[in-house]
Image (cartoon, helix red, strand yellow):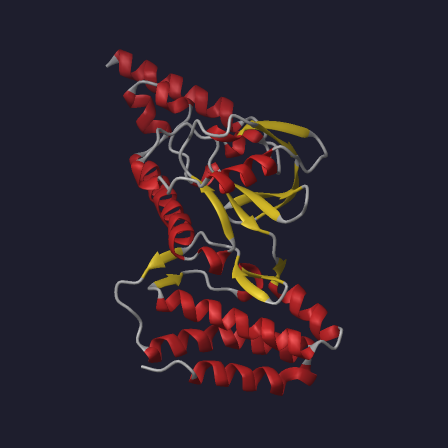
Amino acid sequence: MKTKMLQLLSACSLLLAFSGCERPKGFTLKKIQSYYDNDPRWETTSLSASHESQLKELFAHPFTYLGSGNHCYAFLSEDEQYVLKFFKQKHMRTQSFIDFLPMPAKMVLYPKKKYLRRKRERDKSFTSYKIAYEHLKKETGLFYLHLNKTDQFHQEVILVDQNGQRQIVPIDQMEFLIQKTAEVGYKRLDLLFSSGKREDALESIASLLTVITRRMEKGYFDKDLQFFKNFGFIDNQAIEIDIGELCPLEKRKSAKEMRDELSHVSHQLLDWTVAHHPEYESDVATLIKDMINQIRE
């Protein structure tokens, strides 16, 4: 009993010590590091020689901090054609100094519910990324996915952080994805409409609705379907850039269900058009109606 009490007191002291330390804001290497064993669920197909060569060439040049989202820290490649995204481990980390404490202390500092919640978050996110890589590569602009540690590249990648400081990461040991660079959805449409490029803007909107329709036809849905933060454009081609909430459908959607989902995201587009470029409201509304009506049983 006395031993257990001492263990609990030790755990509480550690908790107080760590809670008293101010965590650095923004990106740090610690926030993207993990210590998980490889999991066969996260294996992906082998790289072709040309794909591997392209990646090694990319990794030979610095990546510059671009920003952060709900799930990732993003870095832009030197040629600005690709975005390297590292996962925010705080949302799914189940390992830390607590692993080295005796069991009673573990239970105080890391309750089972918290462990299971973070494990579910990790599994959900990684499943989503793998769905995108294996089934929706074109729709998401996904160029590469690396969820297990490997011994393939043997390269250290330079990251230029938000303060202009250079950080070095052994890329084989990291969990990350690489996407093609896309311009955020509303910024692209605003530029096109403001420049009087009506046809390009409508082509971009049609591409966006096509991406959503194609995803549903393949049997997947997005729990967080928000045009303003989840989609981008490469020229006039839409891609889904936030891919952490993809799930397989329990059953394929009917044509009516697909029309309803397309109508839902279309409301966001139409509302934005009315607010920022009302002169194009009729054009956008007609396009949306035509796209929805094309979905047949």
